[in-house]
Image (cartoon, rainbow, N blue to C red; front, side, top):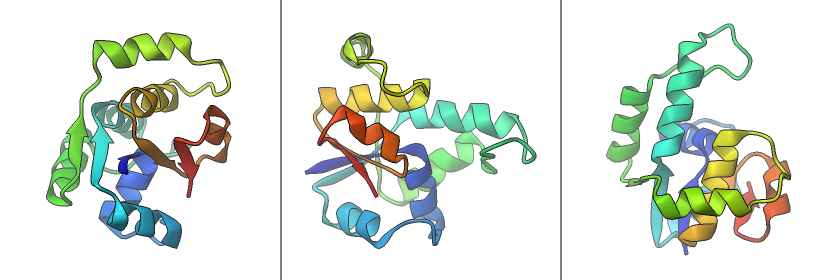
Length: 130
């Protein structure tokens, strides 16, 4: 199955972070394709601009992250009208708008969304907390 990486999973993967679980590595390595969303680049840009003292800081900018994702062999998934329309149908189980957009993309494609946020699994089997 193809996988879509949540923003932090993608960042941890390219940085070789110890926060990335063995299960996440196994799913990424065995996937038929590994994707990152253009939405993740927006999230990175927003959180990077807040600075390192902010809660949940991201220390790389969107341009750096994009280059690292491509270098890792990840494929970009752009936000489409179909993804935006699917966002309208999601129940309000999660509040983070970036996460909700990733969920809508995963459901539309379909892909398995790999995340570190267990709360996102309320959206069903296409979301895996790893």
